[in-house]
Image 1 (tube, rainbow, N blue to C red):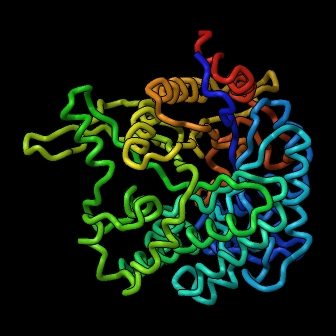
Image 2 (image 1 turned 45 degrees about the vertical axis):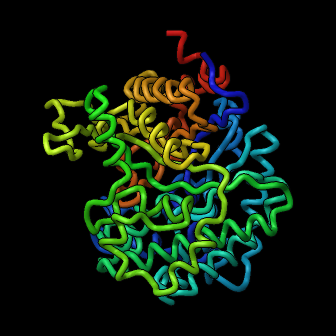
Image 3 (image 1 turned 120 degrees about the horizontal axis):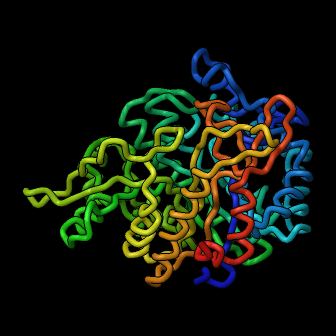
Length: 453
């Protein structure tokens, strides 16, 4: 009752959320530095200037990580820390930070999984049009080459970008994430296309310059539909709904995954969006669909779906009082079974869960510890469902718990605690939660601990 051999048991973070050191050692500004200066943009005016101060405490953090058992660590590179202007002159101190971080991880037998872009877009490039600029894919390729040249002699696991649905949609349409813009559908589609093209150029760049054979992935949101019952009709409804585009919004799977894997946009999406795509979009598809080695997906929950009387999928009603996290997100463990199953059946790519976890109302208790039984239960149930998919021969290569440490949760500031390590934001002291020790047992037993009780 264990997981596959060489399974990646990991935790995950992102650069702006944990590093701090925002104005040190030549780092340039990111759009999140800008967003945090906007009135009422971030809960209680929080910002990532210091965050968890990982920039100065990375050695202690890695040492703590090594004591807590995971064999892998997914982290992102801050583009403006490496290239303050986004392109051009390299900030040697910035790239050296990641060089030292990789060495520290390897010294502690933790495999690095590098995410090249987890939302901290260089402010200077935003001032030149950002993702709307047709040169933006080349900017990303230039940055990718610099990181590849520096780190690929030791790093073999690469993820190009994290959650395009969020940095494109939340950031440029809803305006609740950086850069805080509220643009129209035409701009949404052009930004999305440029981001997909940037992904493809990054894949090509890594393959061309990597010093060790790379394994390259991509980490969109996995928007999961769960069958309301085990009826064949409801299973079919959930699968159809999960891979359909029903409106002009950005919250879907196929617009962001089909081009990468199939080399074409989905037909139902083109009905809504084709008029906004560049005329030479088909020429870009060879680049966008550069072969990836695994599909990373961030899955936190799913939506129950059933077949309606009209033979069309519809959202099923939830029972009042259904469980939620402190973020208000529903707790639906079956999302890891159905999500990985449906994605693997459609795309035929090995799957890595690049994020999964929950916020909880955590604090240090009278005994000096942080007891988070809800998180342990959440993780236990979700991992059992992931194992259920593995038992059905779904090719799942790894699981990354979000997050290693409480951190800056974007527009929510420090309000939400996702970590298995507690951060005191006044003293910056780290306190492993009960869930950290539980996850240590899971990782070190390759999952067998899940079945002990």
